[in-house]
Amino acid sequence: MTSPQEELLPGTRRALLHRIAVAQAEGRAPSLAAAVVRGGRAVWHGARSAMGGPAPDENTQYRIGSITKTFTAVQVLRLRDEGLLDLGDPLEKHLPGTGAGRATVADLLAHTGGLAAESPGPWWERTPGTLRPELADVLGERPLLHPVGRRHHYSNPGYTLLGALIEKLRGAPWEDVLRQEVLIPLGLDRTAGKPTAPYADGWAVHPWADALLAEPVEDLGRMAPAGQLWSTTADLARFAVFLAHGDDRVLSAESVREMRTPAAPAEIGDLVDTSSYGLGLQIHAWSGRLLVGHSGSLPGFVANLSIGIEDDVAAVVLANCTSGPLPAAVGAELVRIVAEAEPRIPEPWRPLPEVDTAVLELAGQWYWGTQAFALRLLPDGAVALEPLSGTGRRSRFRAAGDGTWTGLEGYYAGETLRPVRRQDGSVSHLDLGSFVFTRQPYDDGTSVPGGVDTEGWRGVR
Picture 1 (cartoon, rainbow, N blue to C red):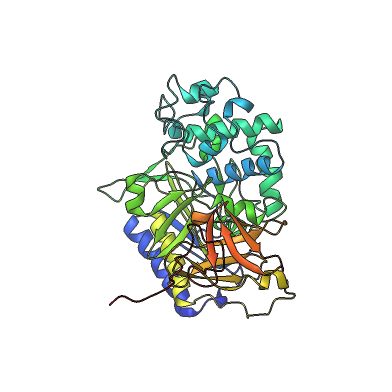
Picture 2: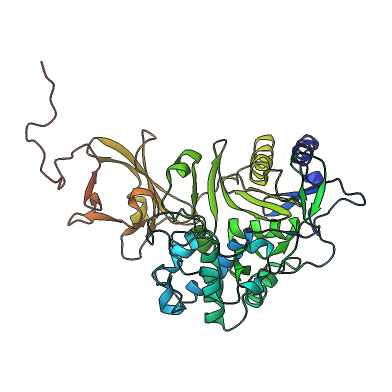
């Protein structure tokens, strides 16, 4: 159940309603339902309908198309976390004979496997899955269109292969595994491969007249892991909370953070659009705000899930029309409305429960050559190294347990930060991937590579 709408200010609720009303009217959607999540729970639900009778509520099912891929990715990450596969494993290791086995598991998750975007033969979204009973029918005679790992090329057959991989390693149908390992633990009891009432019918809207055409609803068969699921705004709101914070019953916070990390090389168009792709999640910037999530479409339906991690606000948008409203734009706007109207209130500052004096000794100002940096202790036990100018290389570092620290992001991801100590135990300098950071610029009392001019700092007449 959603929490009381009164948790949002009246002006915010009206702005949200106005935005979906405009989307439904201008997009000519038979119905449109939306939800907003803040602080780990749904705080608003809204809907507009042109179909007569009651408007859809948070338990009305819609087809969610490719948002299904995110659910499939969660299943694959579970297999990785259990040690049943490595993301660097070629598909051939676990699922031989497909003709696409050079692609790694990570390639398939990030759409960098070089596979075709669609399955050959009749339009798979509007025809029964029985036309494609085997993986060979899904992949066709030429499954690879691009070199493996070189470019991001969205692939529905790639997620079909991931579904088959899940079935092979679990020994059970993809949807059964999904239900037991993801849907039930997260309480998503209105998410399934087939609808149960109440659910929305799918429609096509004539582009030049206000007329409707019923769209077929097909079981996608082998293609199900790429787009089969039906869900609701309430269930997807819960799923958004999971993707933001993790849930150890399904995936840890660290693993869902990995899903949200860019994993695909950017195309030129992606650079222009400031978008990327992680492991089963789309990543893009909207009005200066970074959003992660996924969009989906099938004949008769469009859907979007957008999560603003920094703002702790997420939005779900579902509509039952083949085209019309732009759900990604609407979802991003719903996040923006709440984040700007009611900015996140930070947690109270609290001192650390305990301080390691050996780590505290590292805190403060350091110089890489002449550039000033600050090393700060973080509440989670990590440390951050940041340029004082505000621009330049920065990273958080996690303790490795042997007195060194491992970079978590950016240029220094995976690199080792090592405090170098003098014979008396005091810190001489920091070694970061061979770069020397000293307490003073080019400190002649430390081992600066290349040495320090013995004449020291001087002026010029």
